[in-house]
Structures are given as structure tokens and as C-alpha cells.
Length: 148
Image (cartoon, rainbow, N blue to C red; front, side, top):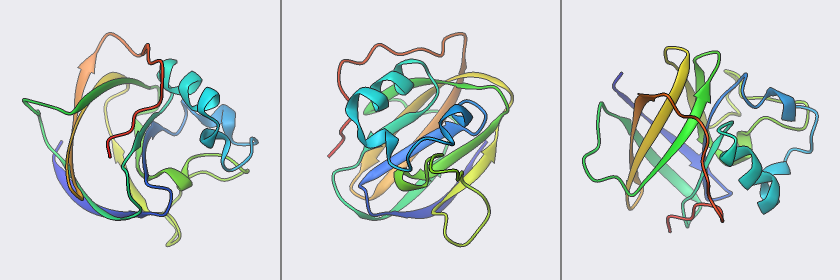
């Protein structure tokens, strides 16, 4: 799957997740993920991937088949195959989840159900992402990912 789009964040965060995998957080506070322990728990369980970008602003996303030298890699599970890629502030929570409204900054893409290794490369405000099928979904991070 290849494609490109833009998103804007005012939390300097990129979130990637399957809508079904993080649905259990829908009634939580809108910013539940800003608590490092909650963020790490969900990332390590493979429910979501958060990437601290260093700066607020506009970013371009390019989805490509493979990245030879990624800055970071992370596993996620995709039980529905409906993956949101976009601003951290649009993460499921506060009785809301990403939809197709004009207020959501990001895009939903469809993948085959399963587990994926996300490869990510950031060059200033340009981000390349690859989704590689994997048998794994869990991670073992000790601290949140901060790219900038």
C-alpha cells in the first residue's frame, strides 16, 4: 500500500492505531495518552503507536513498501484492519474516535487484519511509514518514543 497525505498536530505527536485495538479507551479522558505510564502500557501491548515529533505543525506522511534504514520500528495489532494515522490529539478517548469529519487531522487506511511492524523515518516535517506483516504485536519500551 502506497500513498501520501498531510496532517497537523498541536501536541507534537503522531499516533498510529487500529480503531478496534484502542476502542477500550473511548470512555477515558481525551488526553489519557499524555500520562507516560498509560502511553507505555498501550504501546507495549501493541494497541497503539505514539511518536513524539519534537514540534507542533504540519507534517507530510508517505506510506511506502519498505524503509531500509528506519529511525524507529514498533509493532501494533490490527484486529479490524482500519488504521488511523494522524495527530495524537485525535486518539480515541473522551467518547470520541477519529471519523471523517473536518476536525480530524489524519487519515484512515485499510490493511489486512493481523499484526504489523511499523517502520518510520523522519526527515524534518516529512515522515515515511511502512507496514510489514509480522507475527508479533507487543513491544518492550522503557520510555515513550521521542524523535525530535
